[in-house]
Image 1 (cartoon, one colour):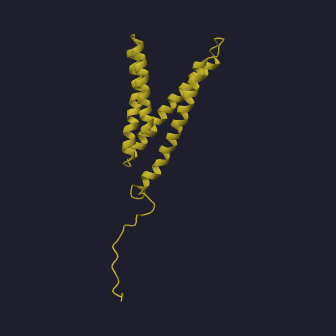
Image 2: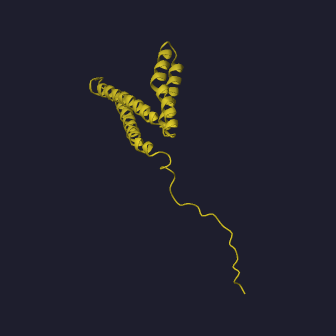
Image 3: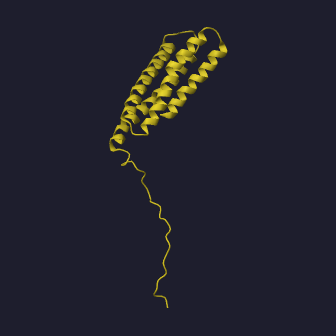
Length: 152
Protein backbone atom coordinates (compact mmCIF):
# COMPACT_ATOMS: atom_id res chain seq x y z
CA UNK A 1 0.00 0.00 0.00
CA UNK A 2 2.90 2.32 0.70
CA UNK A 3 4.38 1.59 -2.71
CA UNK A 4 1.10 2.55 -4.43
CA UNK A 5 1.05 5.79 -2.46
CA UNK A 6 4.64 6.58 -3.37
CA UNK A 7 3.88 5.75 -7.02
CA UNK A 8 0.92 8.13 -7.09
CA UNK A 9 2.91 10.94 -5.51
CA UNK A 10 5.84 10.43 -7.90
CA UNK A 11 3.46 10.50 -10.89
CA UNK A 12 2.09 13.81 -9.62
CA UNK A 13 5.58 15.25 -9.21
CA UNK A 14 6.62 14.09 -12.69
CA UNK A 15 3.50 15.41 -14.38
CA UNK A 16 3.68 18.64 -12.39
CA UNK A 17 7.29 19.18 -13.44
CA UNK A 18 6.39 18.59 -17.09
CA UNK A 19 3.47 21.00 -16.85
CA UNK A 20 5.49 23.73 -15.15
CA UNK A 21 8.21 23.44 -17.78
CA UNK A 22 5.55 23.98 -20.47
CA UNK A 23 4.41 27.14 -18.66
CA UNK A 24 1.21 29.07 -19.16
CA UNK A 25 -1.90 29.52 -17.07
CA UNK A 26 -2.82 25.87 -17.52
CA UNK A 27 0.07 24.95 -15.24
CA UNK A 28 -1.77 26.16 -12.14
CA UNK A 29 -4.92 24.23 -13.04
CA UNK A 30 -2.88 21.12 -13.85
CA UNK A 31 -1.07 21.25 -10.51
CA UNK A 32 -4.39 21.48 -8.65
CA UNK A 33 -5.73 18.51 -10.65
CA UNK A 34 -2.56 16.47 -10.09
CA UNK A 35 -2.60 17.14 -6.37
CA UNK A 36 -6.28 16.24 -6.14
CA UNK A 37 -6.07 12.98 -8.05
CA UNK A 38 -2.56 11.82 -7.19
CA UNK A 39 -0.99 13.49 -4.14
CA UNK A 40 -3.98 13.38 -1.78
CA UNK A 41 -4.85 9.69 -2.40
CA UNK A 42 -1.15 8.77 -2.35
CA UNK A 43 -0.61 10.48 0.99
CA UNK A 44 -3.77 8.93 2.43
CA UNK A 45 -2.68 5.46 1.28
CA UNK A 46 0.69 5.89 2.98
CA UNK A 47 -0.95 7.04 6.23
CA UNK A 48 -3.47 4.21 6.01
CA UNK A 49 -0.72 1.63 5.53
CA UNK A 50 1.05 2.85 8.67
CA UNK A 51 -2.09 2.37 10.77
CA UNK A 52 -2.85 -0.92 9.03
CA UNK A 53 0.38 -2.30 10.52
CA UNK A 54 -1.05 -1.40 13.93
CA UNK A 55 -4.17 -3.53 13.29
CA UNK A 56 -6.60 -0.61 13.03
CA UNK A 57 -9.95 -1.55 11.45
CA UNK A 58 -10.67 2.01 10.33
CA UNK A 59 -7.49 1.93 8.23
CA UNK A 60 -8.85 -1.02 6.24
CA UNK A 61 -12.14 0.79 5.64
CA UNK A 62 -10.39 3.99 4.53
CA UNK A 63 -8.12 1.92 2.29
CA UNK A 64 -11.13 0.17 0.76
CA UNK A 65 -12.85 3.49 0.04
CA UNK A 66 -9.71 5.03 -1.47
CA UNK A 67 -8.99 1.97 -3.58
CA UNK A 68 -12.58 1.86 -4.82
CA UNK A 69 -12.40 5.51 -5.85
CA UNK A 70 -9.09 4.88 -7.61
CA UNK A 71 -10.66 1.90 -9.39
CA UNK A 72 -13.45 4.16 -10.64
CA UNK A 73 -10.80 6.53 -11.96
CA UNK A 74 -9.10 3.63 -13.75
CA UNK A 75 -12.40 2.65 -15.32
CA UNK A 76 -12.83 6.21 -16.56
CA UNK A 77 -9.33 6.14 -18.06
CA UNK A 78 -10.12 2.85 -19.79
CA UNK A 79 -13.43 4.25 -21.08
CA UNK A 80 -11.61 7.34 -22.39
CA UNK A 81 -9.04 5.15 -24.09
CA UNK A 82 -11.74 3.05 -25.71
CA UNK A 83 -13.55 6.16 -26.94
CA UNK A 84 -10.28 7.53 -28.23
CA UNK A 85 -9.43 4.32 -30.08
CA UNK A 86 -12.88 3.49 -31.45
CA UNK A 87 -14.46 6.85 -32.21
CA UNK A 88 -11.59 9.13 -33.15
CA UNK A 89 -10.56 8.41 -36.73
CA UNK A 90 -7.57 10.44 -37.85
CA UNK A 91 -6.55 7.98 -40.52
CA UNK A 92 -3.45 7.03 -38.54
CA UNK A 93 -3.00 4.64 -35.67
CA UNK A 94 -4.14 6.45 -32.54
CA UNK A 95 -1.27 5.67 -30.19
CA UNK A 96 -2.62 7.88 -27.38
CA UNK A 97 -5.75 5.78 -27.01
CA UNK A 98 -3.75 2.58 -26.81
CA UNK A 99 -1.45 4.10 -24.19
CA UNK A 100 -4.48 5.16 -22.14
CA UNK A 101 -5.89 1.64 -22.40
CA UNK A 102 -2.61 0.01 -21.41
CA UNK A 103 -1.98 2.28 -18.43
CA UNK A 104 -5.61 2.01 -17.33
CA UNK A 105 -5.55 -1.79 -17.45
CA UNK A 106 -2.27 -1.95 -15.50
CA UNK A 107 -3.61 0.30 -12.77
CA UNK A 108 -6.90 -1.62 -12.81
CA UNK A 109 -5.02 -4.85 -12.11
CA UNK A 110 -2.92 -3.22 -9.36
CA UNK A 111 -5.89 -1.62 -7.58
CA UNK A 112 -7.95 -4.80 -7.90
CA UNK A 113 -5.17 -6.74 -6.19
CA UNK A 114 -4.95 -4.09 -3.47
CA UNK A 115 -8.72 -4.24 -2.97
CA UNK A 116 -8.57 -8.05 -2.64
CA UNK A 117 -5.75 -7.87 -0.09
CA UNK A 118 -7.55 -5.22 1.94
CA UNK A 119 -10.66 -7.40 2.08
CA UNK A 120 -8.53 -10.34 3.25
CA UNK A 121 -6.92 -8.18 5.96
CA UNK A 122 -10.17 -8.05 7.96
CA UNK A 123 -9.50 -11.67 9.02
CA UNK A 124 -5.97 -10.84 10.12
CA UNK A 125 -7.16 -7.87 12.18
CA UNK A 126 -9.85 -10.01 13.78
CA UNK A 127 -7.19 -12.51 14.94
CA UNK A 128 -5.10 -9.77 16.52
CA UNK A 129 -1.37 -9.24 16.70
CA UNK A 130 -0.71 -12.02 19.22
CA UNK A 131 -1.99 -14.69 16.83
CA UNK A 132 0.16 -13.30 14.02
CA UNK A 133 3.47 -13.66 15.80
CA UNK A 134 6.34 -14.78 13.62
CA UNK A 135 6.47 -18.52 13.33
CA UNK A 136 9.37 -20.76 12.61
CA UNK A 137 12.26 -22.34 14.37
CA UNK A 138 13.16 -20.97 17.76
CA UNK A 139 16.89 -20.38 18.13
CA UNK A 140 18.68 -22.77 20.45
CA UNK A 141 20.88 -20.75 22.72
CA UNK A 142 24.20 -22.24 23.82
CA UNK A 143 24.37 -23.39 27.41
CA UNK A 144 27.31 -24.34 29.55
CA UNK A 145 27.77 -28.03 30.17
CA UNK A 146 28.59 -29.15 33.73
CA UNK A 147 31.17 -31.92 33.96
CA UNK A 148 30.00 -35.20 35.38
CA UNK A 149 31.33 -36.25 38.79
CA UNK A 150 31.56 -39.89 37.70
CA UNK A 151 34.87 -39.55 35.90
CA UNK A 152 37.63 -41.73 37.34
